[in-house]
Image 1 (cartoon, rainbow, N blue to C red):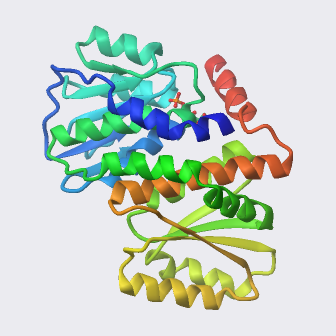
Image 2 (cartoon, protein in one colour):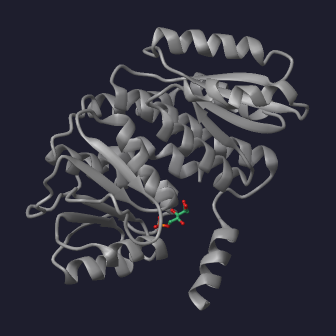
Length: 314
Ligand code: F6R
């Protein structure tokens, strides 16, 4: 898994060159990304990175009743995920595109004249994020989304991937984290926070949870009144965070003194996409260092495989 994390900048660069379908109609005022797990997260991160277009992410069977005429991006790395196939079957029309390495989704989409963006195969789905995200960004641009700074994002990822100080700081965090882990993010980094949580689950085989400011100040914060267990809280920080969000974060850090070990992970770069992806890459790295520290293999996700095998039989 470390190899994939280290290759992310290269993968993003290759993803920029991926051919997109000519004929995909893909028109509408917003868009919906349908998928699960390591595929669906591309939708959450897409929402963090673009401006001007509303993005909804649907995880589940069938399609939501609120879906009207929005174009849909079906994302399933394997192309065989039950929920995503169920959503695809419920979909009417051709205002859609499928991003996949193959499987049933590619077959079904082609049979219905829906464009397929083929991504390289043979990766764990969560390691294929660049190949899922960048084509989704380009499709979002076709519906009017603005995405500034994609090249800068790749440059920032390359620089931080090569930076010993970034690696040392993330490794230090992995070594110092104790007890239960919570990830708190400023608004606009929800996808990055969720990605960090799921990478900790799948790579480091541990529980973690995430919450976003300012909402966490209206509920989550009260839970600290009665917390006894050892806890670690990672604050995702951004140089451009709103000044009231900054005040809230500083207050929360003080509140947690003596109750949790506090860590900060700062975004890098200027553009929103660079800042978001810099957190994604540090979170990914953190999950692999945590796997090393915990003595677990980050690659297999045995429980997910077991569950999928079981569901295929019932
Ligand atoms: C495995 C992983 C999972 C899968 C999920 C959906 O690396 O990250 O969360 O992404 O089970 O499968 P796909 O992505 O093939 O639709």
